[in-house]
Image (cartoon, rainbow, N blue to C red; front, side, top):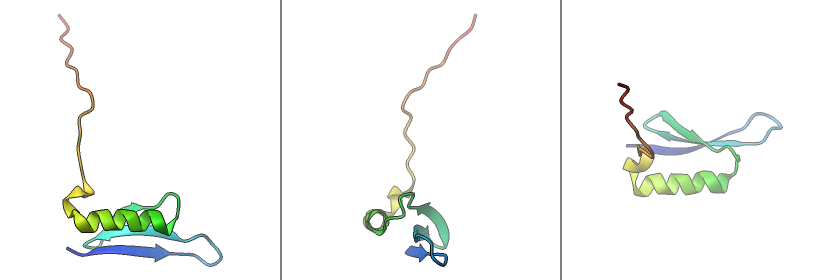
Length: 65
């Protein structure tokens, strides 16, 4: 597995930081702050399985008779 923290910047614009795993885009920083991207990168580095979670917050089945 290859985890990358990438900085992209167009001329005279604010940089955009993004995370890639094995060449696949995972996330980008909405705040465009390197600190936020580095934190996410460190989290993925320590626990690569944390990149995707699924949690059912509420569920209800309604029976109509």
